[in-house]
Image (cartoon, helix red, strand yellow):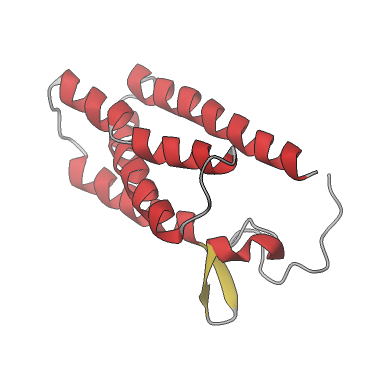
Length: 141
């Protein structure tokens, strides 16, 4: 486990960024809050609540859970691989589409904890994003 960073001024649960990346956060009072998380969770939970109990055709659910998030996943990967410069507006737009798919996926998950579409999206998109984040971290060392 890495030693604590004395220069961190915001608790990890509010901003999982170090001070050099606080441009990826919004300030609420004196606290930095991750911009992506600030958008992702409320939108995903709103979509979850709005679509709970809804049973659309499978093709529509595949489009919502696997297709709609693709631009946001692509933005995350391109930025972390250095192909795009960081842009708060683009980050928010990409996060909204990821949250729509994530929220619908959560609605499916709460209906069936073994839902293959939900878990395929989690595993594939999670692995792709983790690999991009890992590559960015390796580049900056």
